Image (cartoon, rainbow, N blue to C red):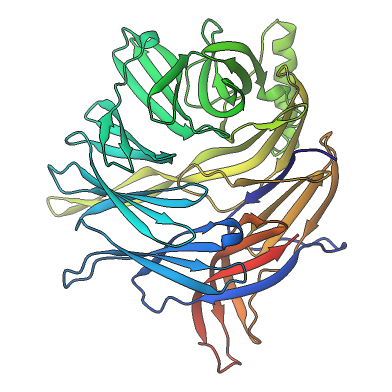
Length: 511
């Protein structure tokens, strides 16, 4: 029995259904509810599990023509999917945009005033148990644009851009005091431009991770900075210094007193894409070890490709190796924070690539139509996921690749895999695609033990015909998961429901 069990949930939102394998079923649909928002102006902004406290559904209603401001509503349901409470949040700005963050016991929304010459923001805190709210007003630098927002302890961190510069502001949610954090670092001295690539929480601590790039002519230097629970700089270090490799992405986990494990992706050519994975251990601001793995050194990394393409890559790889060189393949991978285990670490990454399409556009010049074709972004196609087990020295023990094969393409980088901590004897993952749920179970050596496909995520009303389903799934609590999404349903037989309806559904699932 392991002391640490990881349940992974690969949440995939897409259209359609796939085949179902005949085997003993362990996936049970316990309860389903439909939420029919009669007001067409109401939009579901998000669904958030809060453990045994239940579920929060976050909706918004846009401002009406009479001048009434926009309104957000937090709806609370218990573990039996019964509605128990709600709270309304009135937005203090006529024009605004918002960013959401969630901690273990609080829900936060940053509302940014979009009015010209205004630098005011409002942070609304919602207690997940009581739904009591608290507002904190703060100031950003003038003409700043906020891009990132997260809360650690009682400190909110807001970062973004100011003309061609970057900024970081901390806000004390108890006192309302806000401070600008100087983005000046000794190891980036002389850089003409500094860019904040990402800001994230360090798993297992109250510290924050800043991932920063410094640019000097054609050179790029990547710096990792940790902030303490007050938002003050604690450590700074360069992972790949003198290694001729550039870190592309990073996530961190605290593993001991002032000890951290960082994982992510890298490239040796300073590209936005990556060519492999790394694992790094730091103690204080010193790097203990850093190991890199080429994607093509992983088992079956290209298995999603046609066999001829795989054979061609393998042939090139052997030719390169014979010449003492290394073949690389560029890819985008959404990394998760490393999982700390008794005998090592586990990495999870989701592989994707951007897709594009051509659009025909017609313009008129002197009354005459002119047709042109432009290339537009068409979403990210996810292909497969990677699991890598490392030992305590950062050496690869095993890796496993599994196909994602989803048709839905999100327009932002999304981590479909969610994690739950339990004590079990194996590694289990489950994912929802269209109207079915799939699960896989691995032993601790990466061997597939079993896989299962659920029945369709349908409706309970007799005569219902589900025309389409968009679904996601998250771990909830104990052995329960929550599936949610939208469905278009037709019913010509029952008088209890509309003949045509579009609903938002929640389904409680037991594994």
